Image (cartoon, rainbow, N blue to C red; front, side, top):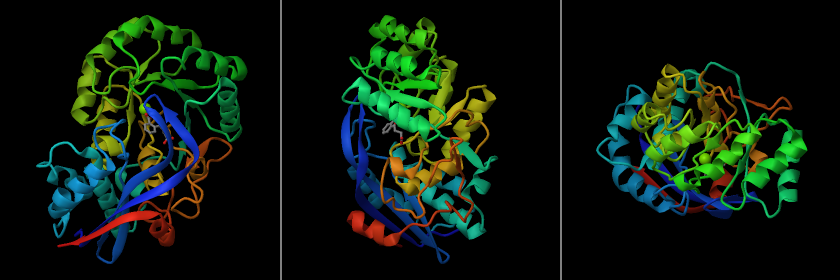
Length: 369
Ligand code: OSB
Ligand code: MG
């Protein structure tokens, strides 16, 4: 496989509904797309970096800079026998895993399309449909939260995650439990607490949650291990797991019992597979996270979610919760059983509507060798 041409775009799309986490509220999303061309085939990747360095240190601007100045020259015109060789070829560039992931994931799409196979088949996927959950942001009132939860459950989703922060936490979980009983429920704090809050966080134990995601600081392991010893609710790590090695260290330190895998966060599909396999060998369940992706990133996520140790419902939901219209047609939809079919066309298996991409584009760059 030879990548002959690399195109970068920055797009802006309005969200169907605002999304609020402990680090802020967003109404739209600005993100980078990578298009690769080789052997007469076009492939796509989506970068999960945000405009702001709040979820991670990377931003759209850093991803643009790193990809155009440093990653593109490392992949253009190079013969890759397999896309798993792409991430190691970028080793000289330290960090910037979101930028690397966008290029690497597009390379998997290119490889799968050239091989005439769905992406899941080359990733090692084993199921045709994946279990879908939803991530519900912080709302203006508990009533509004209960309306949102009710609407998502009516659409079939298999588990509900609510975002929490100090001042919007125990009462929100209590309200959901009271209205909806024992629905599979979890919370995500996006690093909003400190270890000193351990007693307060133990207050979640009464709700029988599936897990609490990233309660403490974004790069911490040690305090999470201390917290896990003091609460019954399983700790799941998201932000802290930026690499396979950090995943190993987290498991060794008993800093979590569950890991959220986002390929964009760990460096792409190859690193995600390695993390997935490591967790399987250590009996740590994983689930697939989301970053409000367009249909392009969402399709990638579905294919990866079809691997066997993705045993819990992921934040991989229908397109219409995010963007209408999406960049792809038809959009990704959830069945009433709360599962989403893994697209079975070539590569990511979705049709990218190029004039929608064009209309949402605010910056574009083409790089050839
Ligand atoms: O922490 O999982 C997170 C969205 C943006 C940044 C971080 C996170 C999220 C979500 C949304 O929870 C998941 C989704 O529906 O895509
Ligand atoms: Mg999270």
